Amino acid sequence: MSQDSWNSALYEQNHAFVWQYGESLLELLAPQAGERILDLGCGTGQLTEKIAQSGAFVQGIDSSLSMISTAKANYPHISFAAADARDFQVEVPLDAVFSNAVLHWVKQPDAAIDCVEKALRPGGRFVAEFGGKGNVGAIARALLSVLSEIGLKEPESLNPWYFPSIGEYALLLEKQGFDVGYAVLFDRPTLLEGGSAGMVNWIEMFAGGFLSGWSDDVRSRAILAVEECLRPTLYRDGNWIADYRRIRVVAVKNY
Ligand code: BEZ
Image (cartoon, rainbow, N blue to C red):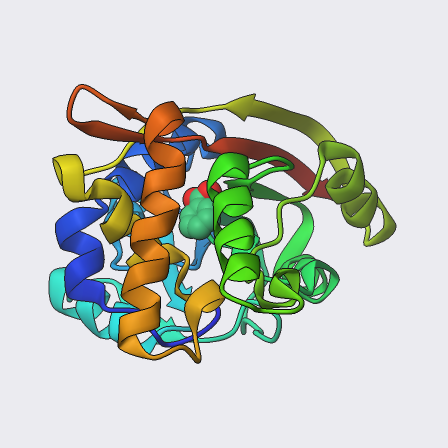
C-alpha cells in the first residue's frame, strides 16, 4: 500500500471482504511446509497467517505503519515489517512472493516487479491479484465527473490507481525475467459492508486520493454527489455492490 493515510482499525472493521476474497488466491499459491514466502502488502495480516498455517516461513511487508502495527498485534508469532513494494530486499532468496489487493496502488509497476524478481530464487513464483483494466469503472467515472463539476481542471491527475490489462502486465513481467503461466481478468461484483453506508465508507477508505486537498465540507458534498450518481446502477435492496474487476497472475522467475 502506498501512503499512510490508512486507518487499520476502520479497514478491519468495514472491509474484511478484501482478505476474505483473497483466500481463494491462496489456492493458486499452494504454499508448502518449509517454503520461504513473502506476503507483499500484507495489510493487517490475515492472509499472512493463513500462509503460515501451511507450515511455510512467511514474512509480511506493507508500506503502512498503521497496518504493520495492527498485523503485529494480531499475529505476534509472524514477522512483519514496513517496506515499500517498489524498494524492498530480502536476505535469503524466496520460493514465492504473494500479493493480494495491493499492486493497484503501485503506479511504478516495473519497480515492484524488479524487487519481486530480485527477491525470488530462480524457479520461484509470483502469485498476485489486484484491480485489472476497467476495475471500479463506474465509481471512477462518477468521481471524475463530480470533481470536474466542482471545478477541478485535471481530475485524472489525482487518480491513485493502476489497473492494467493482462497484456500490459504480462509484458512487464516477461521483460523482467518471468514466464507468465497463468493470467486472467474477471468481473467480481463485490458487496460492500455497511448496508446503505457502504459506498461512502468505501470511498473514504479507498478513494481518498481523489479528494485530498478539499475542505471537509466540499469533500462530504462530493462524496454524496458520487453516491447519488452511482445509486441507480450499484445500489440494490439496501446494499452497495462495487464493480470490481480483478487480474490474477502466476509468473515464474526464469532460471
Ligand atoms: C480493489 O481492490 O480493486 C481496489 C481497492 C481499492 C481501490 C480501488 C480498487
